[in-house]
Each structure stands twice: as structure tokens, then as C-alpha cells.
Image (cartoon, rainbow, N blue to C red; front, side, top):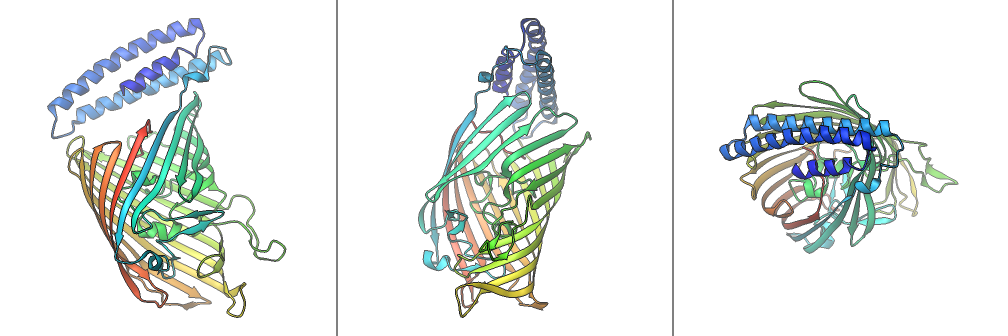
Length: 483
């Protein structure tokens, strides 16, 4: 907090002409004195409340947040008055730079070459093996028995000027380099409105927008990875959000994307451009909307939301082990709930759950048994599937956490020309973890999975047991994660 206040004061000195600068300095000095007094109160309250977080301290933190917003509004107003004055310098906005490295040691009861051929029937093939996304080959996190270098994540973020911020995250792995996110966010639209543009993780649901190092478990929940793939909804597009001026948090959002998700949404032509299997969908083809709200009851926060996504589906998996293609439209519905109770500043109990339901309606193409080309196999192909995960996390103190998660895909209706293929349902997975942090920059997590959702080529269920030891290390300045 003190670092943020100091940086704000330094930055303000470069922005205004001399007359405006003196007036602003006086205002900021008064605000700084007020904030310092409030910080002293917070320190006293924290010393008195070792085992229980003080509601008074939370109120003071909110007052400080309001003071910071007032200060930012004053700076923005002064800058707009000064206009293009030579007193403005972007050199005052130095980017935050951070690097996160994630590695793991994995031991499974199945060999790597066997794991790569397993599937969640009717949902996804090769869930734990490598897959191709365009020109890039990906391996899932913790893909191999033994040691895994999962990724290195380089993040840069900074204010552009008083009106915009920019964030970028670059994902590096043994398989290649990609821009995971790079977007610009507005900061001065006012009236609770915020806009974002670029490549970014959608705010659909709760977990989708969070990066791997912010997850409570080493792997993505079964329903997320099965329906949306390892990267979730991560697209190029625009976002608009409005936070209502209410006593409790209430936010409405909408997003428009090109639509390139590997498991559900796509817009590109399938097959030869001269004689395509399915023609491309022009323009943006994926639309997302959601509403989120939260309420505080004492030391307990309840956060929830509902989400909806609709888009065209052009899925070309002709290069997979079991080649197929799908052309149609897809809908995804989501509901999420998080209940988090704090015992003190570091000790809490959280219960987090999400439900996803999807409908896919279109045409299915499969490999011609007498040829090597894809041919129309079902002009009326539909999937109606649903699943959820629910997890409980107990943070014992600043260093230790323990948790358990249950995953399931409980509805798996796949219909070809009105005939149900009777794919297996009750696809379940169980996980437990123990985590130790030496600091907020270094985390070590031991996790056990029992996965009963995978089947082999003969249609036999395979019980896959996995033990993972993960190390996630970060350096540099990294922005705070969302709640």
C-alpha cells in the first residue's frame, strides 16, 4: 500500500504545469497525511486482532481505497486540463516485470504412451497427451511420468497514461512460445464502465480468467478441460463491463471474440478452400455475457455468477489419432459460487463450485474407412453434456494449505441422427492436495488424483492414479490476482 502511494506521488510530479502542480502537491500532501494516520490505525488494529480479522480494519482499508480513487480522479482531471503539455512524460510509468516458472515430478500407474491414447468418451480424446493447436504443439501440464518443465510465464504490465493500462503475458515451454495475453484496459471512462481489447482470458465463469499459477490444484477441473481445452476461452476480441453503483458488488459484462477455441468454438474453413467440408464463419463468431455479484456477511464473502457463451463451431481434428471434424453452433452455460470465510488475515476456509452445460448442434465428419479423407457421417449430430467440480480449501496459516476436489461429467448425451450413442456418464475424478509456501513467491504442492473418467480404445474404463509434486516459483513485480 505504501509503495503504491509513493509511486502515485512521484508520478504526479511529472504531469502538470507549475501552477497546477503546486495546487496538486498541497492536495496530495493532505491526503498523504490522512492515509498515514489511517495506516497507523490499521497497524494497531492488526496487532490487537491476531486470531480474527477486524471489521474496523476492513472499513479503514476501504476508506484508503476511496482516497486513492479520489487522488487518481484528481490527477486525471488535472491532466485533462493541462492537455498536451510538455510536462507529461511516459517515463514515469515503468512496467512491472515478473517471471513465473512451473515444474513438477509425476508418478502415474500408467505409461506415457498408454496415457496418450486414453479419452473421455464423447467429450475429448487424448486429455493427458500432447495436442496440436494451429502450428503449435502443446502438452498438458504434468504430462509425463518423471520430471516436467511445464512453462515459464513472463508478464509485463504498466499504465500507458491516465486513461489506459497495458498487460501482456508470454508463455514459454519446450514446445514453443506464444502470447497468452496482451490487452489494453480503460481506466477513466467513469460511471462504473470499463473496456478491454486485445487477446485475453474471458471472464466466463470463475476459473477461466485465472492463470495456472493461481489455481488451487495442479490441473484444470475435468469439465473445464473436457469442454474448453487446457486454455479455456482465451481469445482475441473486446470486453465491456459495468459495475452498478450499489452497496453490494454487482457487475454485468459482455465480450465479443473471433472464436478459436479448440474444443467448442471455431470459425475457420475445414478442408480444401476450393471445395471445403465446411465454410468459414465470417467476422467475430463467439459472444459471451455474464453477471456477477458478491455480498459480505461478517468475515464471510459469498461470490457468485451466471455466464453464457454462444458461437459457431468449426472444429478440424483431421490430424488427430482418431480424425474427425464438426461444423455447427455451440452454446455453453455456466454457474459459479464461492463462499470464503476468514478466521484471520491468512487462515480461511473456502468452498468453490462451478457447473457447466453445453449444447453442440451440427454436422459430424469422420474418416472414410476406404479412404484417407473425411466424409459426412452424420448430418444431424448433437451433444448435450453437463458437468461440475466442487472443492474445499483450508488455509491453515500463511504457509500451509490443504484441499480436496471432486470432478464429474454426469450428463453425456451424444446423438447421431436422433439416435443416442449411449456414451458412458458418471465420469468422475477425485483430487487431494497439500501445499506449502515459503513466501508468496514460492509454492510447493503435493497432489493425488484418482481419475475414473478415462477409457481406452476398447471402451474399457481405466482407473488412473497420479501423484504430483509441483514447484511454482516467481520473481519480480506481479499484479494482484482477482478474488
